[in-house]
Image (cartoon, rainbow, N blue to C red):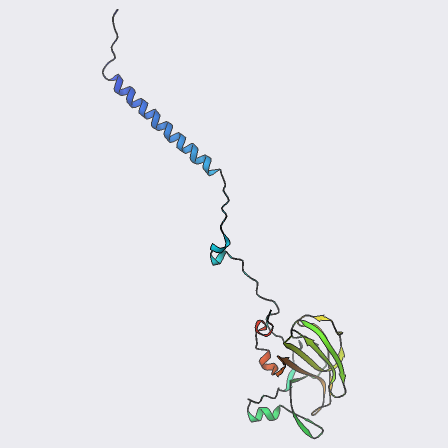
Length: 215
């Protein structure tokens, strides 16, 4: 029987074809594995103590952040300023109140206007006192913290009651008549008591609420 013999070029050709098939299979399997991994979604838990600063929640700034004036109507003016012992002699003289032949230091700011105006709370707080004074009219005290109380003198009428919670700019009453000094028909004497001391309202308006009211 005659034996068949492969030609010399056949074996190398088969070897090359086999390598090509193996390489192509490997590439195809690798691509399939990558596609499969891309479909898997993983959740990574990172301890909060290693988070960067910009990933931490931002605390909102407090509202009611600035002190308001005790009125909203334009045209209201400061007729008598607070008596400041550090002010000039002229300013001190202009801040004196004359009553029954006696000059007294003004312990607040006296605001006046040609017409009646609403008196509003300068900050959030609670009404803790309402009195009626023969000279200074109706007087309302609003407590904002254990260290801060604002007092509104010379009111002709009051819109709140003791125990009421008031928000900044809430109306607490109306300006009224005051018989001290020259006498004024539409007036408000505004005082600030901070840490047990009378504070100049003009300095009070410039203070940060976050410093005035400690949480």
